[in-house]
Image 1 (tube, rainbow, N blue to C red):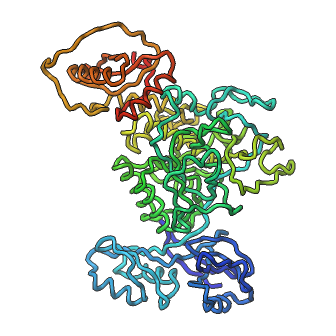
Image 2 (image 1 turned 30 degrees about the vertical axis):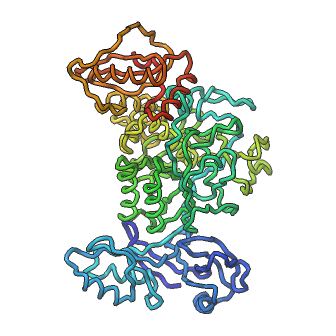
Image 3 (image 1 turned 90 degrees about the horizontal axis):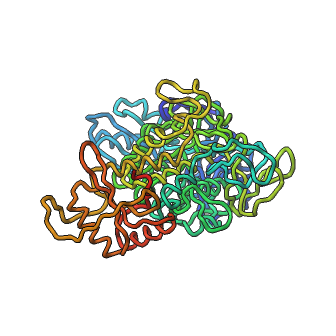
Length: 620
C-alpha cells in the first residue's frame, strides 16, 4: 500500500494506508454491523467515522462502491503511522497558519487550488479549512500545503486511539480504601501495608471540617460513564458527549467502561453505601469521548471553561512518538489552564502513563498541567508508572495492593490468569457496583479530588498556585538519593501528594491575603460608632466558622455586630501579625465538635455569608 509523509505535532510521521480498514460516516440510526458489505465493526467513533472492514479483496474498489450507498455520507481510508498499530483517520479539517504578509486574496488562491472550503477564520493568518468532494485526500492536501512558501504550518486534523491508563491489579484485592487513610492492614485478608502510606485525604477532611464544597466542579474527560451508578447519579452537572455532540452521554458499550471507576475515585458520593471519593461533595461534569483530534481537543477543553469546570481530570493519552502534541493542541490546553475559572485557570490533571517509560504521556508533559504518577501501599514507586522531567507528584494506586472503585453496569470484567475472576482478583465479591482498579488512571482522579479540596479551602487560588501547593507540600518517599538538590525525582516528582498539608497551605494563603473574604462597605479608620464591648479569653480548642481577615479594627466591630445579631453565636477575634501589620481574623461560633461548626457554615452559606469551618487550634 502507498505511503505518505506529513508533519504532525512537533515531528513527521510516515502514513501507510490500511489494506482492510475504512471509515464510514452515516446517520446515527444506521447499524453498520447489519449491512451486507461490512465484515466487522471495530470502532464506532474515530474522528466522526465508524471504523470497519469491508467484504472484498480490493479495499479501494470496495470503498468506491460503498460510497454510492444512500446511507453512507462519507467514506475514507484508514491509515497507520509507521511503527504503530493504532488506526488513524483524517476528520477532513485542515488547520492552516499562513506566513505574515500573505494577503486574503493569496490565501483564497491556495484554498481554490486544492478545492478547500473556508470553515473558520481565527485571525488574519490562521484559518480552518475543510475538504470538499473535489479535494484530494486531506493528508495529501496537508502534505502539499506544507511545501508552499506562503504556508507557515498546515496540520491535518486526525484522530487516533488514545491509551486509557488502567493497569489490571496483579495482587489480591481489598475493599478497604487505604489510599485515603492507610492503617497498615487490609481488613478482610491477612496482608500488611505500610501504615501512613496514603494521600492523607481523611486528615484533610478533618482540617476542613467537611469533605469539600458542593460548588466545586470536577470535569472527568473519558469514555464509559455509568450515570445511573448510585455513587454518581445524584452528582451529574452539565454532561456532554463529544462523539454524539449532545448532553445525552453514551452508555452500555462494553468496549468503554473506563470513565466510571475514574470518576468514582475523584468524587463518589457519601451515601452510606459503597465507596467514597476524595471530594465527595464536588459536582460531576462527565465529558464523554476522548479524541486525538484537534477540533475535539479544542471542544472538550472549551466546554469545560464555558460550563464552569474547576478541575479537569484526564486518565488517558499517548506515548506513541508519532503523536506528540502540536502547538495548536498545546494552545487548547493552555487556554483552559489560564483562562478558565474567570481567569484563575482550570486545574488540569493528567496521568503520566503506565508503560514503564522514562518519559511521560505527551499530554501530561504539557507545562500547564499537573502530571501524576503512581506509588504503592508501601510508599514505593509503582513499577509501571512512567518517569520523566515533567512529573509533578505521585499518588497511591495499585502495584502492591490495589484499590476499589465503581464499575459500570455493562462492564464485562476481566478473566485473570489465576482464575475466572472478572472483577475481584481473589474471587471475593465486595458488591455488584464495584471492582478493583489501579494504574495512573486511578492516581490521577485521586489528585483531581484533592485539588477540589484545595479549592474548597481557598477558591481564589489560581491553577498555577494549586500545582505549586501540591508540589511544595508533597511527602518525600523512596530513597533520599532519588531526589535532586531541588527536591525533585524522576520517579516521584516532588513526592507523594499530601492532601492535609495542601489544604493547610491553601488556608494559610487565604489568611495571609490582603483582600478580605467578605465585602465590607463601611471602612472605619478613626473610631466612629458606639459598641457594647465585652472581652473574654477563648481557649484554642474546638471549631468555628472563619469569615475573613481584616486590617482595620473598626471593620471587625461592625462585622461582629452584624454576625452576632444574624446568627446569635459567639464571635472570636484572633489578633496576629502579617508583614509587620496587625491583622484581625474573625470567627463565628465556638463548638466542641466540628459537625456543629459545619452546620453553622451551611447556615451562613445559605444566608450569603462566605466562610469556612476552622479549627481554633490552628489560629494560635
